[in-house]
Amino acid sequence: MIEFDSVTKSFSGHRAVDDLSLTIAAGERVALIGPSGCGKSTLLSLLVGLVVPDAGRVLLDDAVLSRESIVAARRRMGYMIQDGGLFPHLTARENVILMAGELGWPKPQQAERLAELAALTRLPAALLDRYPAELSGGQRQRVSLMRALMLDPDPIILDEPLGALDPLIRADLQDELRDIFAQLGKTVLLVTHDLAEAAFLAERIVLMNRGRVIQTGGFADLVERPADPFVTRFVRAQDRRLAGEASS
Image (tube, rainbow, N blue to C red):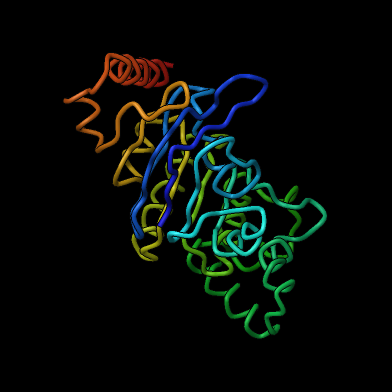
């Protein structure tokens, strides 16, 4: 469904993505992970058309994304970011149905889809008429997920969606996201800095560094069959971070 074909992107002379090729199959759940500045969020920006590649191609269903095609392509994608990215002057309900209204969906169709998504994400209907500032972090993320799913998109793209949440709320939402992904069967591309989260939510992990893919595979591949010394250092650093969080 998604292909990055020899893609390069630089900012102020720095190569954020360096001649990178990666294919994600329809229905596959993939997590991009790596240290800050490794290029994982830039890949998502390339996919949704926020930036354009300096070289190479980005494809969705074998069609090359371009300035002319990106608006239509975005309507096929669900996009969820850290802390929700909700419009503060709109209620939860208005945030979720915004694009459906712009596309001319009838009111009954909007209401039916809204009710389906509230049930799917376990968001109480009474919260739909609150503004984002009146919601907790976990509630905002549920509303953001509803908005991302409103048009029944494929793929679903998530850029560190749980990174700012309390650990207990984060764990609950991880459980719910995994159940939702399994239920919907959508293509999922997730960026996270947390290896445990990547292993929990994705079928395949893509470890990046300095704009390149260092290794791709399951969690066991990274731990037991590292393709590069960097992989081992990254896994050990994650282990130390988790040990530090546990001791504190």
